[in-house]
Every structure is written in structure tokens, then in C-alpha cells.
Length: 420
Ligand SMILES: *[C@@H]1O[C@H](CO)[C@@H](O)[C@H](O)[C@H]1NC(C)=O
Ligand SMILES: *[C@@H]1O[C@H](CO)[C@@H](O)[C@H](O)[C@H]1NC(C)=O
Image (cartoon, rainbow, N blue to C red; front, top):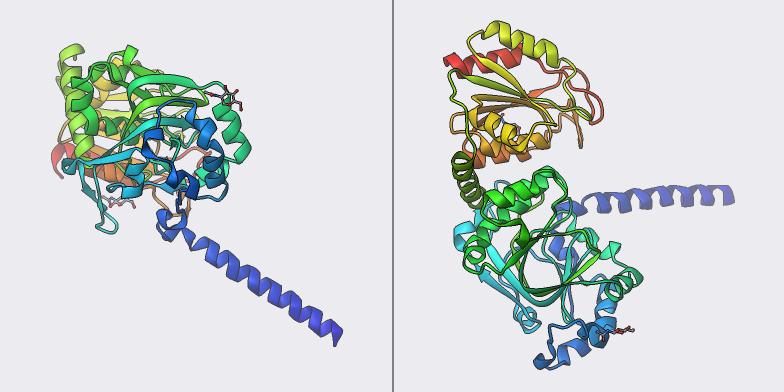
């Protein structure tokens, strides 16, 4: 009997475990902002508005309350929209920029174009958590729900009591999780400049806080007419900004179509003005070369077949070590871009109208067999480029090489060049 009881217990435990796991797995389908509430501590709510001094000292007055708020996971992930009244009481304001609204491909929900301002704001950590003496907000939307877990009481306190880089005047925040990766830098974050472009042009004392670790980060700002002296690298543990300006972020892996189009047009116009593009005398096929993960194992065979099948066409490589000028020129002149899935595909924003993109996906994606990351398909749609999905012939995983299905590539290239 006892044996049976313990057996039952054991089965119940497994059952309970399965239930809990199932509940946990279904979590991502719940909008993140429902999971994370922000409630201002009562004392902070009663503090008179005059106390909202944009000075570091205010931390000492209300810091412990903010810490308490973090500890209780009462951090709010901003899903774009006007801030509620209690937030504007805390010095966080929002302004609509409806020309940058986008509606989600998946659910049709409008993702609003907004510009937020925060008076006297600390910015810290890889999630770029923003807080003043009264509220804490995560504006970025990649992994934003993790931010509160990563910021324990002690880290927060040591960060703010440790060295803080003071930035006076107006500073635009372009930082979010993974912004030190090319796709997230260029497509998600840099493009957010569109929402504050006029402001940056009018107020030439305003600056931008951004990841600058990518080899071309500075060049992109320059091309847009933002002098490097106005770009502050996000390379310190904590910043304190007198007036922080935050253009609304997109969902992770997504792009804000009108913003991408505006910035792309400005970049291309300026590239054409400043770079000398050699004359194009024949169609160009560009193959993107990756060296580490997801490199094409049959790169040579692919380019040899392309050269043999299309002798009047220029077949060239875009290599990781290419200069900025080479990268821009090659993409602007390409009629077809062939690339294994990867951040290099972000450069399709420099392709001319009519170019076609052939993306080679791993047979096993990040989420299993047949999973295709759709971020570059979305991007191609935003720019109006035709794009094709092919799957590696070998079971290429993230780390292994991919094998381009050469016959399929030839068929697509031929259709693009000869319309058949
Ligand atoms: C805040 O308090 C710490 C000690 O807890 C002190 O070292 C620091 O100078 C204070 N900061 C300001 C700006 O008052
Ligand atoms: C390529 O794959 C993406 C992601 O699954 C999909 O959204 C898109 O429609 C596909 N494109 C084509 C041309 O089939």
C-alpha cells in the first residue's frame, strides 16, 4: 500500500511538472508588458513634482525606493503608445509621430511611432534600463522582459554609486539589447534615428548615445550628417543624461518600415554624393561570404557554375574584410545577392530597386527543422525587393557550414536575368 502511495506521488509529481512546464512554454505568447507591471512606490508618488531635480543627488533620496521597485520586478517594458499620466508626473513624456506607425504583419496591431523624453535619466546595462528618481522603463524590446532579473538590488546600487558618465543637454538613446550586433544595430536601432532626424538637425548640440563597436558604426552616422563628436559610445556601465530622448523601438527582429525607407534614401543619396561608384557595364551577381558560422561549404563550386552559366555577368564576393566603400558599391550595383542567412543580409538596404535576394537558410533553424528566421524577408518587403528562400542541402546547423542548392540558385538567377 505504501509502495502504491509513493508511486502515486511520483506520478503526480511528474504530472505537476509537465503542467508547470507547459504553462511556462506558453508564456511567450502572452504580451510581455502584461507580465511586467510597474507600480510606483507609494512614497515616491507623494513626492512633490518640484523634487524632480535632474541631478545625481536625487538618487540618494529615492534610490532605495527604486531599488525596491526593481526587486519586486515592477519594471515596465514600453510597448509603444502614449505614456500614462502617472508616468508624465515622473518626468517621462511622449509625443506621437504617426508618420512612423507600422502595423504588425502577424496580428495587424499598430505599433506606434513615438518619441519619449525623460528628464534626469540614468541609463544602464545591456538592456539599457532607463530610470529617473520616480520611474524605471525599458524602451528596447529585445529581451526586455529579462532586464529586471539581470538587475539585482546590489548591481543597481553599485552601478549608480559607482562611476557615472554625466551627459548634459539632449541625448538620443539608440541602444537596446544586442545592439552591438550588425542587424540589430543597423536595422533596429540606427533606423530609429528617422523619428528624431529633424530634431537632431535643428539642435546641433544634441547628441546620440549608441553602440559604436561595429566597424562601420561611425561611418553610418557620418553619412547621415551626424558628426562623430556628437556620437557617444555606449561603453560605460552607467550614464546620467540631463534630457534623454528615446525614439520608439520595434519588436525584436522587426523594422519600422517608414523609418527604414527614410534613412535608406538619405544614406544612398549621400553615398552617391561622396563615393565614386565605377560605371556598371554588365549585370552583377554578389555572393556574400561568411567565414565562421553558416559559411557556404560549396562557395567555389557555386561561383564557378554561375560564371560558366552566365559568362556576360560579373560575379563578385562580398567579404567580411571589405571596406565600407566596397560594401556599399557592391550592394548598390548588385542585381542578385546570394547569401547564407546572417547579418550581412542587412546590407540589402543599399540595394537598388529591382535587385533580388536569395537567402540560404540552415536546414535546422534556431527553433528546429524547417524554421526560417523571417527578419530578412520582412526587410526585403519593407524596401520592396524580391526575395527567395532556399534551404541548405546539408543538415547545416548554426555552427556548421551550409551547402547552397546550386541548381535552384541558377534557376532563380536565370529567371531574374532573362525573365524565365
Ligand atoms: C550619495 O550617497 C553616497 C553615499 O551613500 C555619497 O557617497 C554620494 O556622494 C552621494 N551623492 C550625491 C550626489 O549626493
Ligand atoms: C521566405 O520565408 C519567410 C519566413 O518563413 C516567409 O515569410 C516568406 O514569405 C518566404 N518567402 C518566399 C518568397 O516564399
